[in-house]
Length: 109
Image (cartoon, rainbow, N blue to C red; front, side, top):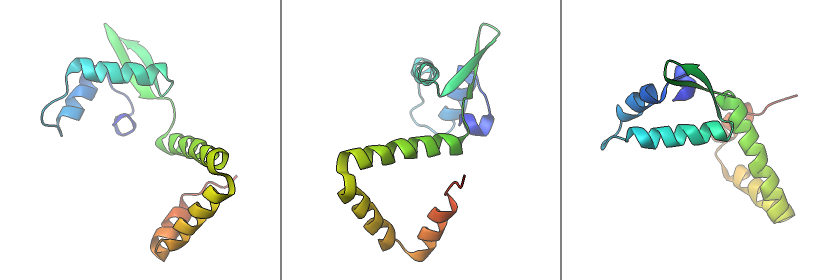
């Protein structure tokens, strides 16, 4: 939601999230989640009125790339060659269209 809106206050986020929810989320629930995301460095905040406006610290693509790298590192550390071989087998088992789509998501440096 934050990436689509670029920034939001807790109230704005609550309103947006509750448009699609039954039962609605409580203000304190959204405040807690946003505060934790800010504490962990996923959101930054700037003062606005009596509260804050929050915005993502990274693009969605950059965050997904970072989290993917962490997951891959854990796979390598925890399962070594077996994990890599199983991942390769799973990728090969995908249909050609899905493999092409996954290949387009690669970052080249």
